[in-house]
Image 1 (cartoon, rainbow, N blue to C red):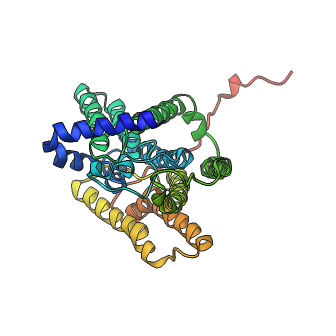
Image 2 (image 1 turned 180 degrees about the horizontal axis):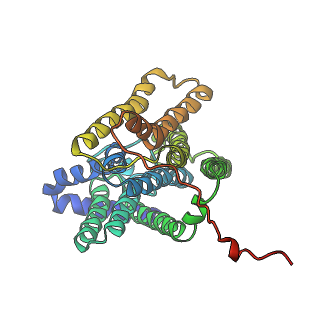
Image 3 (image 1 turned 60 degrees about the vertical axis):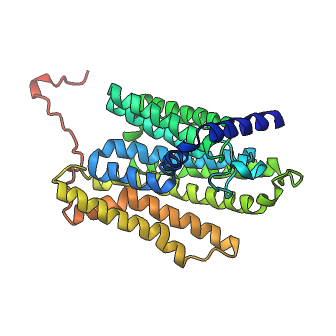
Length: 340
């Protein structure tokens, strides 16, 4: 393992020494992979551009976040600048390294957009964005090359899994009654929570003999907090999307001004739940702070997916599809055969 880390450090040093003029651009690319960027981009697509595309991206994003947080804590991998501070052009000491969340999310989001839009230039742009996102993380010294490759691999598995779900299981899921769909939306984050608890039990306490052990207390605390956040968001988004499809059925179209107002109103609500409640909810003691953190992200997720669209429809900022009708087939009397 040390050999892999040494090679990764050498790659970062080589990039920084030979291409110092790329620092600003790489920092910009890395910023585009932050959670805040996707928190704005994905809801805008969902609320105001293409509802079905936005629904898919919203759930994939939250599902990917849960998976990434679980794997990061399970592997407890270091970041390059923890081993050599001279390569650290950006500081992100609050989470473990492998797999790279920026690379994993970029792989899923941009390639799904390319699959959806089916344009050659979109595919070219998506592949370029995925490559540059991974390169920026290595260049800035916040991820090893194997962290980025692992992020790509996990992203590929999630993307393929979702596409298979969409092709073979989505129609059957939609035909289920509301209670069954909600049950599945609840079971998935609960299953992740149980798996996470089992992983923590199996891996035990972190190795305090590593060279970067000074980061461990903060890393362990932040890892648990991040997992509670992502589980709450996944639960909120899953339940919200199910409820929206059954109770609201809003349309993302309409005049430009209505779309703009929806985005502004929706983002105000999202920031209120995301940052506003953070100022109100206590973080200590942990037995209270962790559930409240999950609740905050649950409210954020269900606002984006359900309550936001419901408010749009009630304020007449968005139209809604009528509830699905019940088809009745009337057969002529002369075609009805008497019982034998």
